[in-house]
Length: 136
Image (cartoon, rainbow, N blue to C red):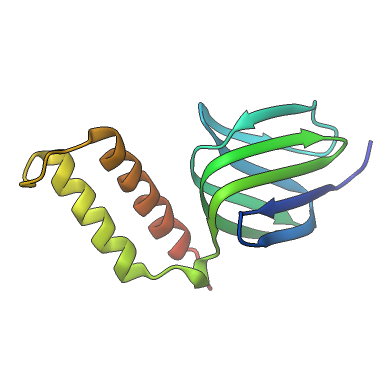
């Protein structure tokens, strides 16, 4: 058993993270899951939220949405639809997206509302705001 994990997190546009880590926590479709060295292999659909990976005592965060995660042989591979580091997030834009989604969900919007899309938009905005707040 290795004492560290290899984390590779990619989107269709770029390799966002390729690093050795001590721990990875990610949003699965049915809730967050944590991975330490020696974890059993598995494959899951990725949800909307934040990926945290720890190197020593330093924690790093990315806002992610959609995709898949695979754990095998002390390697975590995350193929996400989107992934953003705190410094890449436009907080004002994320705040506006949160407000629009909340309006749609509350019924105050004049549009015909696709509630599933509005709920997903709200979850993405909240994840982005949470990760942006962790920026240094």
